[in-house]
Length: 377
Image: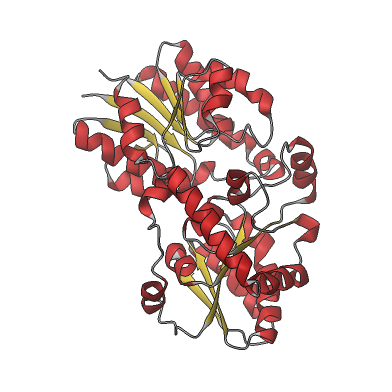
């Protein structure tokens, strides 16, 4: 049986991995997948040697806190793969973790594919030399990435982004509202504070205060907050409890897609959710807070003025970003309401996001599977 080592680092990696595994199984049913997998990958038969949550750590200070455990886990994985060599190794995102592993395995003659280019176009551009040592091939999600790797002599394939294949070119707002039992007349704000506990801790009180300010001006406003774990829900519930005013905030278990599709506007912590909002053609305000020291370190390494994927893909500011010190409730509420009152802007943003959608819609899983199978023949 063909064996593929595979390591995904968080929920978005689990989604990518599940689509890739499904596409590979259709072409070659007897492939075995083993490494670190999330629930979506495991439902397709992938064996996870460690919980995927062990890798879901973001921010320099947060990584330092968990560094010993991460290093120990990585060494254990390396030993497993050296004792049980796979026919191919695929690292899905989690670059700081996976590149080390890939370099070690490549040195032992195992081909390594890294699925999702790290943000070398945003910061730490010098990493490309280390990437070249670690990977046999990069699978890139965004159309501007291949040229960077080709210039450095790294084999690369552009596969597009799976969300562009999954999400419709025209969102079904009425259907999403019916699913969530919302009225067509409601002013709906989707608020996505992030998937990690540390992110929700940074954003929960901020989002509740923002909702309070928006609701004061729009009494018919309703707020949808999709959360994916019991722990993140408890953090947000505490922020609501600490707000004396009763607010129409509906906490959802999952349903991020439905919440954004139903919304008039999205307030979103920077990350993959910003791309999903763009593909759903939603006006949005991107925001993010992190510990001060992490922010100072990150800010020094930025190569671009924007951090949100919609702005990076457009090559300009098409949606506002309120980060760190600018991320306060007054700013978020004011910018959100001002954005929604500009009808010309709303038309332009729909056209901009439609163009982005077409550029990313490439039948990603099929392209990625074809690239992988080339190493298994």
